[in-house]
Image 1: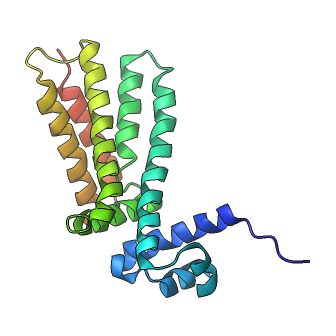
Image 2: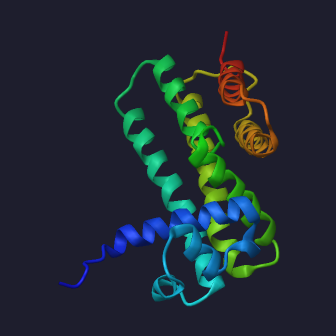
Length: 204
């Protein structure tokens, strides 16, 4: 009998391979040959799904967006069930941590994000999914800050626009430092930075 191929599972395996190769060797390393080798498939099998390098890169960028969005939506569902201010703040920190390189999967994603962010400056096509990530993160930050402001949690001199921009910059900085860091305590420190930042906004 012919072997039945799960197309969705194979695309997921190829997505993992694409992200791993880019994180390790940059965007230029993501050729059909290197992706086939990483995913333990024949080049022809990879070519069945992708016609070339540009299509592979777009798939990788869209995979990055989809996986991050899926994790964030899971936290949003939790956020809707919690009423305690401390619990909501803890969930908000969990959400922000999803874009930081705090485990092996997110380390790969963060490295790939930075690779794409550089190339997106000169590539109209790749700028679209990266803009989705950037705008999505800003929207997440805005939601967290706006929610706290609407609940009158923050101090009297609070400036909504400034604090949205400031928290966005903090998360971006933590992502960059996490990719470059070799400190094994970085995950714990990153969470503490976010907790401290949000606590610093609270009214006393």
